[in-house]
Structures are given as C-alpha cells and as structure tokens.
Amino acid sequence: MNRTVKFGLVAVVVLGVVAAPLAYRHRHSLHSLLHRIKNSLIGSGGGGSLGGSSAPVVKSLDIGGKKFTDVLGYPPYYLTVTQFDAVLFVTRLNNGGTNLFHVLNLKTGQEEQIPSIADFGRNIGSAGGGMRDYIERVAPGEVVVASESSTGWRVKSEYRLDLQAGIVDTRKVFYYDQNGQITNVYEGPGF
Image 1 (cartoon, rainbow, N blue to C red):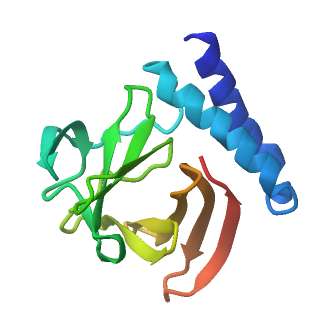
Image 2: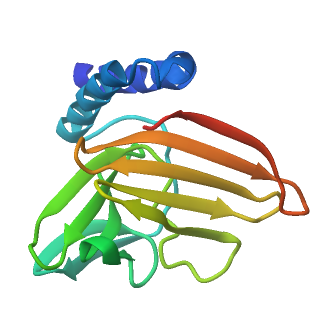
C-alpha cells in the first residue's frame, strides 16, 4: 500500500472515531480534510481494506454517450435524479472497497465523481432480497442516497453527497424495531 493511501485510510478511521462529535462545529476543517482524503483515494488506484463488499459488478455501462466500467448493482444499474436531469450510479474504483459515485447530467454531459468507502451501489436495481439502494431526497447541490436492509432488523444508512464539494459529507444510520419505530440514530461524518 503506498503512503498516500495509508494517509487516506487512517484519516477516515480518525474521522469516524474522533471527529464525529465535532463535525458541525468544525465543518470547514472537516471539509478540508475530506477533500484531502478524496484526492488521495482518486490517485491511489489500489489497496485498502475498508468497506469491502461482494457487490455485483457489470463490466460496462453505456449511458449519456459515455462508457463506464466496473458498475455496481443490478439492471438498469442507475437511479434517476429527475431534479437535475441526471442519473446516479456507482463504479468500483479499486478492489479494496473504494467506490466512485457518478452523477451524470444527461442534457449537458457534465459529471460529478465522488470517491467513497460508503456501502452503497451494490443494491441499485435490486428487486427483493430485503436490501435496496435508492435516492432518499434531492436539494440544490446535494443528493441524499439511502441503503436499506430489512433482513432481520431493519437498518437504513443515509449518505449526503455534496455535489459542489465533491464529497460524501455526512452519514446517518437509523435502527428500527420490529414495529418499524426508530430505536437509535447514529450521525457522523461521511466517508
């Protein structure tokens, strides 16, 4: 593993453990650190063991006049973001579990790429099995995606994609009881 990747992975772990309670008071510093992590992940091209998954991967997807490889999920492999005339899909960035969110505007061809170790994308297009990935909500400059599992206890993870900063800046995890009532919520920085 090269030095850049080590820094990026260590920073992610530190954010998850130490910076979570400080995330909102020190938002500017957190954004700066997440930008450095983003750049180290994009340039790494390998290594890392966080967030690994056995996500289904299709070799390529042709969409908007572009070809993308190592796309996660099931047909159609993308989610529609009607508010932005765009689609959202996820590709595997490397074998260590790092993925790349893509938000591709179908009218302009403009694309935002956001690297992350978030466990999202492998259940896009999934029809059943108690697991699904979907768009929770959209607002100017952001898309909130959710990954939900209802095998056993229901758990939903939300990831806020900041399209202007190019980062996953927050994560919320909701835990539900057998009656569908939220019993616990974890909120912390994204990754």
